[in-house]
Length: 138
Image 1: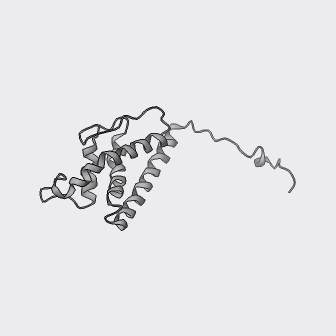
Image 2: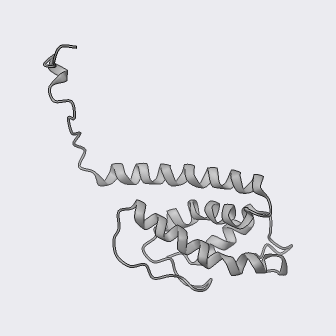
Image 3: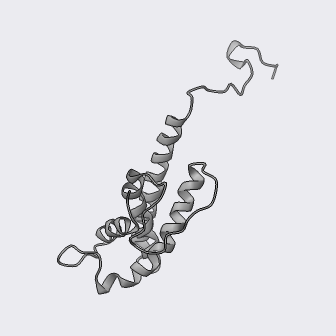
């Protein structure tokens, strides 16, 4: 199970904010670290809505908390783009726009595949017999 810090580390790597030793915890990222739990809570709520889950959300409050009910592939494959976009929205709007686009693209791919796997494969006929030429005159 991934933690908030895992998402933060990946986002700092994207944003080129790692120090010389490859660590994300440094004086330049302190403000980003303070803002991260709130942004991650927003993305967790978004995930749960898109996944069709109901019920309360247990908010994360610090970097070491695990992301409950969020698949690891979504946490480290998608969420860091959303975090980077939200952290850079004021500082670098162009980069934030790129990360937001990538986040939305990956999120949509994930939920398209997730939704396809969940369904029973049946397609509902909404046209009522049009395939047999049984439709009214124009």
